[in-house]
Image 1 (cartoon, rainbow, N blue to C red):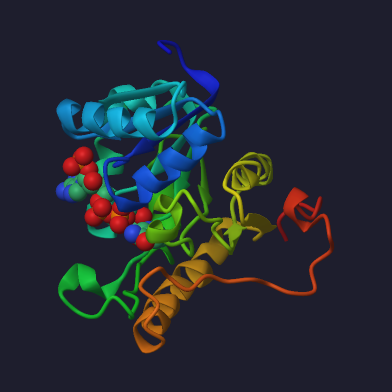
Image 2: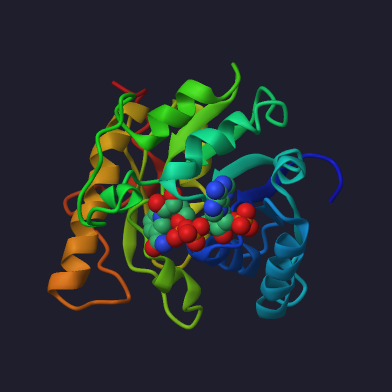
Length: 239
Ligand SMILES: NC(=O)c1ccc[n+]([C@@H]2O[C@H](COP(=O)([O-])OP(=O)(O)OC[C@H]3O[C@@H](n4cnc5c(N)ncnc54)[C@H](OP(=O)(O)O)[C@@H]3O)[C@@H](O)[C@H]2O)c1
């Protein structure tokens, strides 16, 4: 992989819990994966780990800006408090036509308060903050906030969770298509990006439930009453 590929998925901060979990799952499903890090050695080490767990997989580890250039889909997997600075630092590396996936959650733990509470974000959500910072022509889609890193990394088990995907219609459809690569995940059409504020809030709620019900593996969500083919999207433009 040296050119930008539509098939590849870049995961910035893919050395951490959630990003590495997604990298493992996508690589196992046969998608080329590029792991981004602030430090090349950490990216290489994470790529080695993924290769060991997914023999034959096409996996590369690069510094974040270079990783950005390799894939149409770029997943941001850095803590909320470092999101704005990270995106600002990547503006030159992002190009029109790319899709940035925001899965950040503005948990109050960012300011030393509880991870079961949410911080207010001026733009409405972490995803809308990201959308306010990317260059023109780059689409931002919100997804994967309610999926537990612990469950992603346990490759022996499915990940039972619905993934509410919000953002511009075409980019949203493309990101919804990533969900079935992880056994157990189902994509649900979450409409416009402004709905990300609701989805991000659910994560704080789930973290509280993990504590109250003592589920370190992570509680997930399942929506009921949707049509059988919900995972393909509503087919309707965002209202
Ligand atoms: N963990 C979960 O269960 C979970 C669930 C749902 C959503 N999420 C979301 O997924 C994202 C990643 O979560 P995580 O638990 O994987 O986080 P994490 O392990 O704490 O950090 C992920 C990566 O962020 C990078 N990073 C750390 N400090 C940074 C800084 N100052 N500037 C730029 N990059 C920095 C690091 O990569 P390098 O040092 O290699 O650069 C690190 O490996 C967060 O937005 C979180 O809200 C997490």
